[in-house]
Amino acid sequence: MTTRQVPRISLRDFDSRKDQIGKELIAAAENIGFFILIDQERPSQQEIEEMFDLSTKYFALPDEIKAQYPFIREKNTGWEKDAQIRPSTGIADPKESLQLQYFRRDSYWPKDLPDIPQFHEKVEHFMESVQDLSIKILSFFAVALGKEPSFFTEAHDLNDCLSTLRLLRYHDITGKLADKPEWRAGAHTDFDVLTLLFQETDGDGLEVCPGREAHTSFAVGDDWTPVPAKTGEITVNIGDMLMAWSDDRFKSLYHRVKMPRPDGNLKARNSIAYFNQPLPQVMIQGPTRKYDAMTASEYILNAMRRYYQPTGSAPEAGERSNKLVAAAA
Ligand SMILES: O=C(O)CCC(=O)C(=O)O
Ligand SMILES: [Fe+2]
Image 1: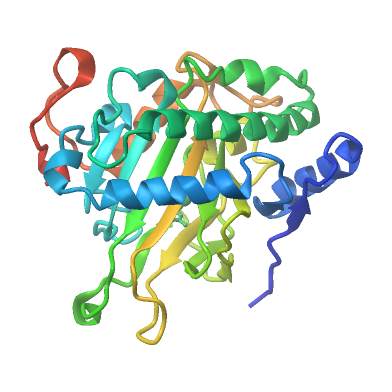
Image 2 (image 1 turned 30 degrees about the vertical axis):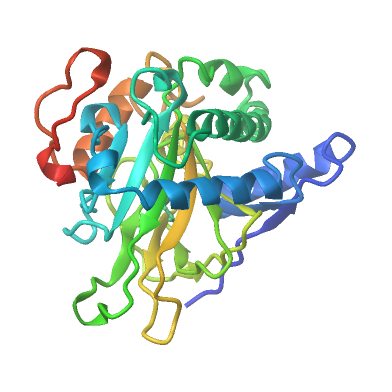
């Protein structure tokens, strides 16, 4: 059993400390694949707290309202409840989540939500903040891979890219300990380029473990390191696509969320993830061509088919459907 530290990287005085910050980010990506960012300007502590507040209000709505925009597997968008079956566990994570892409904000974001009139405005603003920070980090990785600093910026144009904001809520398990599954989120790697995860103080449970060739095969290690939850800090991890894009130089790690112990915090756990995903047509291939080139859309579709049950037929024009799809029921 080895002890691994998840590095904490301060972004204070970003412009004057750029070189140092870049070195720390690249070392963390190469050696660990996970790191915690602190002292970022945006998204600010207040923006993050507001997003958690908005997320709590959203999940408190009746399921019938949330089900007006059901999860569509082929598009990785919409609301699901108890529908994400992890290959590592074979059962659905006990949670609900809403996935939103910026370019679908007029076609497939929940509208006119009771008690949350500013849903669209706040989510848009938050996505813009997280996108800016993501691009800052990715520009260091681009240079390390021998590309222009703007390489990933162009590949992740917010208006057209597949980046996804995911609001997550793991069920309250008070009084339900007897039949609870072992994990709130089963072990998995993220199939995106880079994930920025927001956790809330008292919402511990996230753990990471090394994976091998995570973007090509499923592997589970046995040495898990907790990543403590603190509102305002940002847990960042390399996704499978960036591992492939860097010919395995940057590591995509397995991670999972543990069920609390009986004497732990049994209340619902909220988290928010921003998955950076390129424009659909962008080709993923590393400098040494270790793996066959694949478009981002092919890469994501393959991953969606591994991680989710089919959700039935394609949605109607405008991507709107009132039907509750089987997997989201
Ligand atoms: O909720 C968390 O802390 C982790 C979520 C996660 O790993 C995911 O949705 O990919
Ligand atoms: Fe994840």
